[in-house]
Image 1 (cartoon, helix red, strand yellow):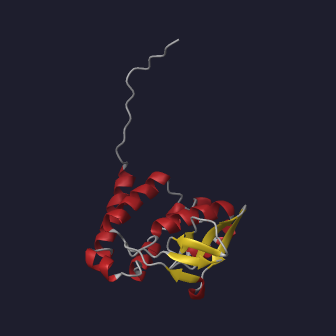
Image 2: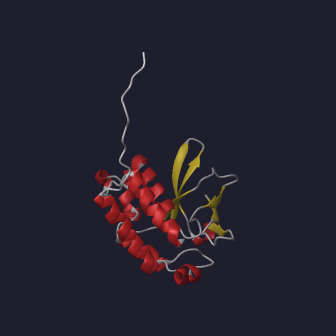
Image 3: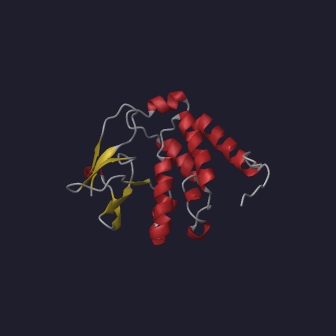
Length: 179
């Protein structure tokens, strides 16, 4: 049996709310991540003023569900914000923080308070080897990281003594982190 549904039309246009989100982040980053500001953030790849502006606007907590104190943004909304960050090469680990905050909210929402207050949270992409998580995105500036150690997900605080920044061509705030 063959089904004929006729042509299927899909509207891929952004909603008014999504267009406003894109526009607001575009304007924010035009002011806070100009080419001069991005260059001045080298070699750490982190601009504290921009981070403060992003956290003040709720850019991290937008990734967290409303029931945990966030905005409950969709993955599309987060992607639209990520696109704007990439356009400006913004020196702030927002995407890492959003992903980590979303994960933390799903497994340990009681640990979210520091993140909701603006601390930099990241996640280790690789399990630690010999007590060191290598090439942790934002590890050079984060105050804590989520680390998968065997079948346990750990929230590990990061002090300056625990991190070894890794020089890289993009001046991203990568670091090897002792866990």
